[in-house]
Length: 271
Ligand code: IPE
Ligand code: IPE
Ligand code: MG
Image 1: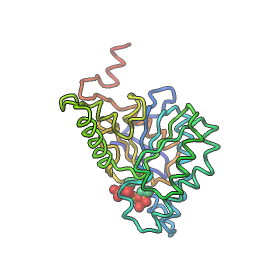
Image 2 (image 1 turned 90 degrees about the vertical axis):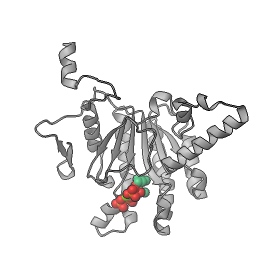
Image 3 (image 1 turned 180 degrees about the vertical axis):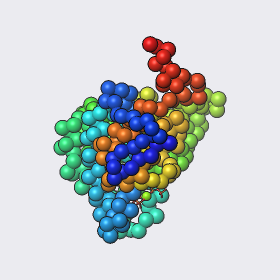
């Protein structure tokens, strides 16, 4: 069992301690449930929005670090279809954040060769938020490095409903037989369908803040993702903790239902 001690920036597994290997297996797609902004602020007797403001700084730091260590797609859960339940003042602040974020950060994203993408029901966002998102996508469209994919007004159940509706419509219009509907057709119709097939599913899913749940995020796509939970609140997360999560990933034995040899035995076989 992995335990992470944010204050000490250290994690241990019984006696063994694993280290991040920059030349090792870097997960191509990392998804993060950025949670704990409100608690970070409450701990400091600040309004919740102060936590969101600080969380935005973490997004910048983690984006740059993810790009530096060679992650190809970074998907960040920024606003869920359920987050509209929050007080109007908080929702309004969260809708203003992308405007401030992109206005200030796009030049750096261009410098880092990062390409912005947004997945979610963006048509329901306020006009100023939609404009900021569209501008950032346009300004970074020629970048060829890491894809920074924001999940904004995203919900996985809604995504599956939308995909099902699209497939049924196509079936009715083109007379597609039910038997021809397969996993790849469903994957094509999900909001990650814009990515190349081998990059659509996150290899590593991180959730901050100590909560160990999925909260309607990428339900289909995380079928075989490695999960990493840390007690660190999102504003306290950083490049070092990202490397710890990747180090944990590097020491997992991914079997996909098969019978891969444990890492230690594998070495014995190849030596
Ligand atoms: C995550 O932090 C940001 C969003 C969900 C928008 P929270 O706002 O959920 O912070 P906590 O969980 O209340 O601490
Ligand atoms: C998940 O966090 C959504 C985002 C990080 C955007 P929440 O704080 O909304 O999730 P719950 O309510 O704790 O499940
Ligand atoms: Mg939360």
